[in-house]
Length: 276
Ligand code: SAM
Image 1: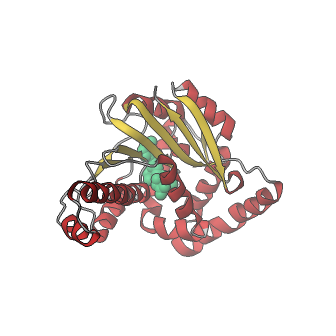
Image 2: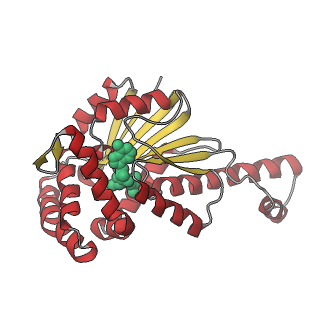
């Protein structure tokens, strides 16, 4: 198999990927902002809008790292839950909006029963995620689980939604991870994957190549003192299957109604599929 442009055995790839994320964990969030000029935040927001979770949704975020998708999910469902609660209160009890706001402040469960489990193979990434959750005051609806996407530590038919953002290209056996995603989703559940993909605009493609190969490893070296890890990140992106190939892989794992949407000229794509 491949590790960047290096050919390594399948056993070696997992260990090398682990080392990369162990080494980038501390600087991961800052580097994400620097390297994507902040655009990764918009891509992640779009993933949430596409998911449009309702209060009560059970989400599994695999390769969830430092929790970017999980925190967005919690904010989103909290917003949805508040809107629903406030409408219900006003309709049922004929309260004023001020009275509702007062009453609402006393509500204990602000998520309507929603939960997110962040599962990642790397202890260091999860550690940073937990620290962020504490600092931001997230107390309920969130769990951090050490686990491999290829062998998820969960029962069958457990989650409403499975997400994996910028994670699947790091997995050694993608087909195995997709089968696991299918197994742990409830019937009717949704698979959503945000991942780098193939650029479909020649001008953007040239600029993107230049930026990826000339700028990103340099930024990695200057800011994090880690050229190699950032070179791997760039090279792993190039080796990931095209939008259509990946769509077929998702279908092969048993998902139906598989579609994808390109963002920023295909620099990234969101693939979606359902377990029906
Ligand atoms: N989802 C987060 C985000 O969007 O910011 C983190 C993405 S980070 C680029 C990739 C993550 O995949 C790392 O945290 C890494 O530890 C995790 N990872 C790599 N291989 C994995 C595997 N086999 N199972 C679970 N997580 C894995």
